[in-house]
Image (cartoon, rainbow, N blue to C red; front, top):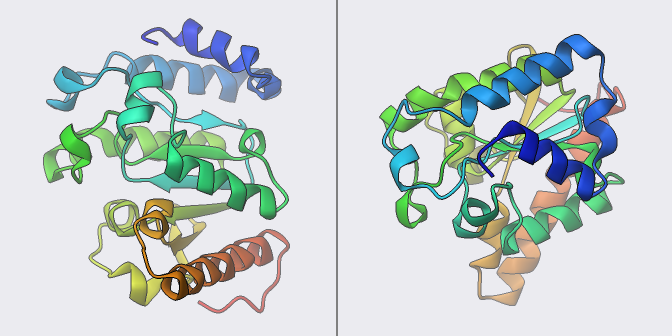
Length: 220
């Protein structure tokens, strides 16, 4: 998909009528932002990608999930988190009482880095303003950073995800909760390790839900 109209048409075909349920001005801003993403040539990733992956979801989400960048499947279809990691993420979202259509899912960079490598500093610098603009327009109640690459590029930090997952941070005055990337779980082989990581990730999501409910007991 290379045109905004194609993306909007696709959203409607999959039942995502939420794209029309926002006040005209913010919706217009998001459409214009998406148009800019779909024509971006600010870094070399646009030369190797198949499709731009702007992000998708509700226009007034309580939760915004942020990953590092599109993978092979996402690059093929122009949609975020639709591969195996995305399927696991959807199960987590469903367990939280939401659906893919009621949250927003995006990435630090909007084009797939070759061979799924981490995005480089110049690529992030060229693309991060798009994510910042999306956050400003969407005004989510909580941002969930999936993995250390998403967290550290959003906050300009250098945290190990295992040490800070579940902790409360802030970006643009919006609470930020980091957790594991779903792919991290999929790469685990030991059953006990998989169980532990899943439990920790769910514990992080419980903190996200507590913030949304206004639970002041959430620890920073």
